[in-house]
Structure formats: C-alpha cells, structure tokens
Image (cartoon, rainbow, N blue to C red):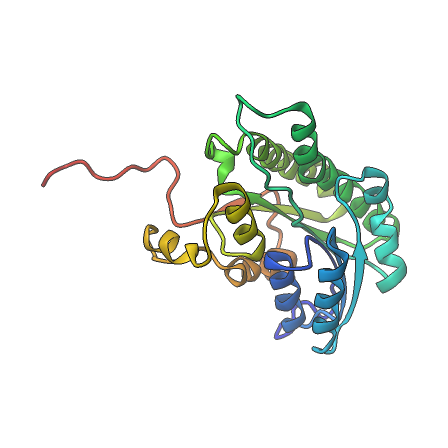
Length: 265
C-alpha cells in the first residue's frame, strides 16, 4: 500500500493548475503512472504536462471545454485511447464567474451551469459506461464548494451549479453501486489557487498579495491549499477509502450552522 495508485488510470478535469495539478502530483507520488489532464487553457496545460512527465509518469494533455457537451461525451474515449483503462475521474473544472439573483443573465447562467454541472454529469456518464464495459471498478471525486450551504450573493449561479453536482454525487453513487463504482464529493473552502487569484483581481479589484489579508481573517490564519485537498482526493480515489461512496465532506475551517459564543462569561 506504499503505492496505492500503482494501477490507477486517472482522468482529471481542470488539470492545468491549482487543485487539478496538485491532485495529479499527489497521485503520481502514490504510484500512478497513467494520467490524462483536461483543461480549457491549452498552453498552460501543455506546460503542466511536460513538467509532470519529469516525474516518470505517462501524462497526456487533452484541451477541452467542459461546457462543450459533445466534446465531453467523447472525453473518456479519448483518454482511454491514450492511457488504456481509466479507473479514476476527478471533476475539478469549473467556471467561477460572478452573478447575483438581481443581475445574472440567462447566458451567464448557462456559461456557469454547463461546465460545472452538465459537463460534470456527462463526464461521469462516460466514465461509468467505460468502467462497466471494461468490467473493472472505478472511483469518482467531484470537487464541490462550501458555498453549497448558501454562499455569497454574488455567487448565485455558481452555488446552483455546485449544489446540483452535490445532489448528483449522491444520486450517481447510488445508481452505480451494483457496478462497484464509487462517487464522492468534497466541499472545498476558500482556496489559494492561481485561478482564485485571477478571479479576485478580475471581479473584486484586489491587488497583488491580497491573500495575506484574507488569511489573517481566517481561524487558522491561512487559506486552504491545493495540496491539502489533494491528499483527500487521492484517498477517496484509492483502495484505502474502502467502500466509501455517496459521501460529501466539508473541507473548510468553518463549521456550517455553528455560531460564535455570545455568552459573556
């Protein structure tokens, strides 16, 4: 069990940077030697793949828009053509654009829902069909968000997309039990990633170094890091997590529903 992912063939969406890349690095450290990384940014994806190959793994780039559903429907077959059997899927790609109940347009809604929920669903469908046809078990981890519990007003369509994927995590897990395909999810808290840095600057006008101020306001004085979550993803994808399926974990430094003690004593 020193290399629990020695037999894993992994397909990771949103794999060019941030959490997707951290998951790929963790899987490689745990023995995985066959990976396909999917991302919208072809240039950044190619650079990441080249760097990961230096670790001795067979890593392939598959540039793809998760909002392009016909392309998503062919994604697993493309991965299998490159690395053989795919036994692990990570749905990590997401559009984090802002929008509230007062200003979101139908076009903005679709631009977020299509990759975050619809694309993730059809990725799971393709993966499940592959595993069943090939006759081997599989594991899926859906990257959700702590905002499924409500979120900020400016995250309305993003919240809806992740809440939809949370529901699908449980529904699909139950549906695939007879086929030994496990499906779990992680509600990730505020995470320090290149994508979040770009989003904070674009949508909120933050300057370089904003992370230090944000971290100071948090209980553990730091944001969630991609490598923190990557350990949990690798665990859920591998044999050490046993029969766990349909589980959704809050990976954050707040306890949802708990409030500060107002007792003066």
